[in-house]
Each structure stands twice: as C-alpha cells, then as structure tokens.
Image (tube, rainbow, N blue to C red; front, side, top):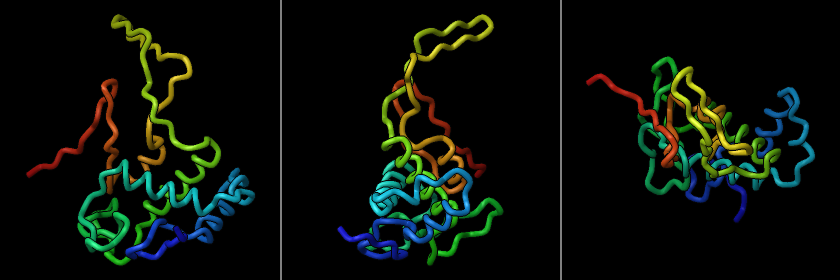
Amino acid sequence: MAFDASVGGTASNSYVTVAEATAYFEASFGRSAWASSADQEALLISATRYLDLYLDWDGMRVSQDQALEWPRTGAYDKTGCEYSSTIIPMPVKFATYELAYHMLVNGDLSFEDQSIDRVKVGSIDVQFTERSVDSGIPKSIEAIVRHIGSTNLASASSVRCVPLERV
C-alpha cells in the first residue's frame, strides 16, 4: 500500500505527511529519534489507523467514500467554532505525530489492562500490579483530542467517562 496523506481521499492512510511530521519533531525538544527512523511512513499510517479505530470522533464523515474518519462535519474546536470540512484539524495532526512517536520509542501500543493487587478503603490505598501498563491510546494523546473525540476502549477493570449534554 502506498503512503497517501491526501485530505478526504479514497486511498488515504495518514492524516499527515512525513514532511509535516519531520517539521513538527524538528521544532520539538528531545525528539531526535524521529530523524533516524526508517519507518516514518509506517508509523504515521499505524498512528492514523489506531486513532480511527480506538477513538469515537464527533460529527460525521464528509463522504462515504473517504478512507479515513477525517475530514468531518459537526466537529467543533475548543472555542465552539466548527472545523472546516476540507481540512484535518491541528489536534488530529498533533495526536498523529505524538502517537507515531510514542510507538517509535515504545514499540507499539499496549492493550494490557492494569490489574490491582490490593485496595484498602480506610485512607484509600490502591496498589497496582508491578509492571502493569495503561492500555490503548496514551492519556496524553487522548487529551489532545478530547474536545473532538473520546476513546472507545473499555475493559472489566476500567471506568469510562462520557460527556453530558444539556438538552
């Protein structure tokens, strides 16, 4: 499969280009591992795929024929302005960069649940199993897009938060 970062394309597989990601990491402190990676396209494709698989995006896809979830209509920025249906919003691009870098330095995403060894109620004392990890999209990346999407990963040991809307 060829790398394709066209907006709304039927064969698109990345929200950002390698050039955009490289510029982002060149302007970021401590992100030198990106420059030496031979897997930049694969990382961006995988990051895009994971974002679309594990996040429920606000709004609706612009076209049934587009390969990716963005562009969309009915998605709003933090100030309440609707994103244009002809672009990939910057938070989606930032999340793609950050998730690609996370996978580069951590070897992919982990889907193991955290397990709890002990819970004490008096003075609240929760002890997680040693070496347990968060599952799915890292919380720092979820925070980037929280105003336009939410994670759809849940397990028996997790609590899912959902936004409330006044009708």
